[in-house]
Length: 600
Image (cartoon, rainbow, N blue to C red):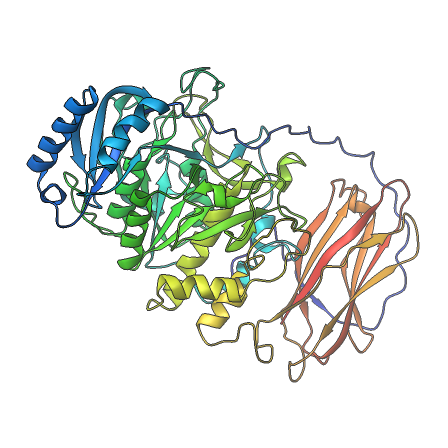
């Protein structure tokens, strides 16, 4: 079991007869408050013009298989509409890409599309639209990985690591590409750059075998008249860290599936990414064939798409997803950051995908997250407007335009939620390689738990639970039957802690476990308090014996207590009512018990 810095085990306590109340203790002046973060949900640049169309010919038509026939047909239609149309290339799905010769307005594009639609040999025609990364960076550096382990709104990931860590599974991150990071390099396998436009790619060429992220920064108006200037996001590297950052290397963070392999497939540049590039990336990453591109030597069993844009799911995108799922790859997508119904955003509204909404540290739907019946499940996405500590910490780079030195930063977004689910899918596939994409989706949803906070509009099956899901797919128990070994019992009811007042207690009722408790009972405590040095925390067993988890300390002059303690409970019965007793022994600061849990 990994021991994260953010879930510190502070030695093995032994349950003893109840202790007397804690004494007062002086303490240092209040620590300085962290600066506020004013980041907002990302704004999608409007798309007012179109450069390419995607034309799918019916299977019986000669143009469906012959590039020469497609060129001839497109040339004929160019003469009919008076535009300079040209055959560009064939997609991995078999559709033809039509170059419009120049950027056409939406109205002009509609006229061209109408000509194709009138042809009985054409199955569909749609514009090549742009999609964008779903994330919002903040300006603060380090935060704990509450999203993995906190009792209230974490995804219960450490409990799953006893079963699987992602070993032997490749996860494709279809995103901005990759900037070197020592916490990821050892888990990275060869990928591909699918950005066709050299200007958008900023690498001097089109598609190639180097998925390096050269930066997606842009100047004001560069990607449309109303677009604002922005620095490079290094979005793909951040997403990858949540999935597969290396663990137990004495630095940085741990990924959800920290022994999985990460394959970077670059599709997003300075002005987002196009449907044709994304569709081919989905096809290639899952082991499909794309004209002009070498075969993927490491097909991915999980695809993460933390990207999207407004509109319906196009036939091109849906065909690519269907092909990937047919080859056995699970496709995970972000719901979008517009606080709107996800049914209006693609690929979130496509079929055969797991669409992921974002929750905050309190277990509410994050205020930016899309919602609705389209959502399959929710995962931690963070809210950096509260503080950087409430965002999702992952691997990044300090460069504002081009790459510079590696670092770690907290982001918020459904882009941060989706890789939690992609990582969970990788854990499931290591534990049971025969799982199909449909079975993976079903198990994640069946073993989700209700959001401990609130969700307006619909958050799918609830908050994903990694440990419960792994137990279900390996036969160790899931949402039915008696609690197996390793079962977690929790109380997520908020309990105010009086300032310099009497002790307060919160109870957890344990049932279904025979005999005494384990010698390493794990006690996770989540207390929100402006000065945790004031706090004394005890665990009281059903027989009245107790153990001191935390003493007050003048030197412990920081806010909040989020730790996991290890207690020897082998001399007391497991079943019964366990209590957490919390006392604030000094005046001037207040807080509350947010949640706590016992893991047997």
